[in-house]
Length: 443
Image (cartoon, rainbow, N blue to C red; front, top):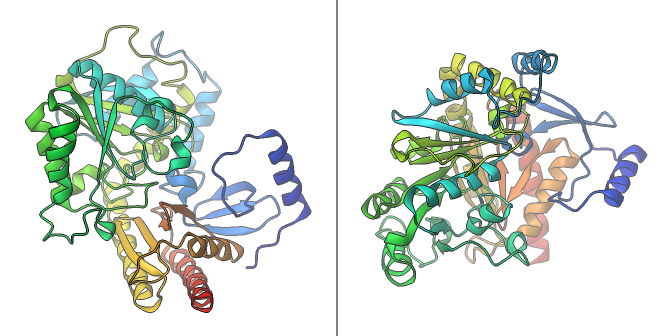
């Protein structure tokens, strides 16, 4: 299929530009009308294979499934908003009880919000309240949201932070980005110098460990480039937290909810955090976030933190139906994330051998990134070539999203059919081949 941009599409985009604030839209004129399973359809009838899960929201198929939609419709006919943070309602309590069964033993408190950044805002406040400490540690290339507290930990792109400071008291440290090691080393001979840096510099020269409330970490960095760290890196961060009485917060907003093959991405590393944050796929398409804490951390004083829409009944109904579907199909979903992720990685590694502009291929489960470079020797980021791939693939019926400086993320619905997955990969390879050829001509 060759994408056709119609007058209707042009008109809607023009109207959008007049009334909507600029957000994060890229170069593709996708005006979505509906979606179903593996596919997105625009207002002019163009059909696309989806490799984005619409920003990691539809892990189990575009527009969720019939059970989720029916649960929302049923709840909408009764009551959608119950001011749950000021009054009581059974539905959010039942969902919290259901959700906690997916967490390690000892987790027993949940706070509902409306998004990932709000879930992280709650985690910031809770960690400071529980420890009576004021500093936070975040990682370079991290993304925890764009509201002001979460933005203080975010360190993905300058445009996200420019003009918005000063921020909360946050110290940023290197993540284990092995393809671009900031110390010029190679794993494992590096001895995890990035961990030593945290101990010797951040905690040895910049901020006393006894004043650090929490370390915020993405088990796999998302917006920063789909960066997968070595297992022992995550374990060493856990050790630093334990040795210094620091709370470890795992941001599972993008990497969680089965995307990496496990409900909690942190479980891939054999590590348990103290606080988890979730959102995106949790609501099956409706806005909901959650902050989940160890019971041993305690509770918060009445009025210390709250919101208006947290525990919204329509969103909770969707989330509860989504979780019931997950539990019913857990073994199948785990297997699909693992097996389909392997199919993609195998195909991409073959492309990496063929095309000079593919510098690195990495992933965990069905959360996979391709990093584009000008050439393999220099490793110079190639955002232009990456964007060319996104646009050409879109024009031929495949929707994808960029991340990092020059990385392309591959996150189809976990339930995508093998046929549609392979067709999407064919479109992707054609786009990469053409971009590689164009880059060679330019150089």
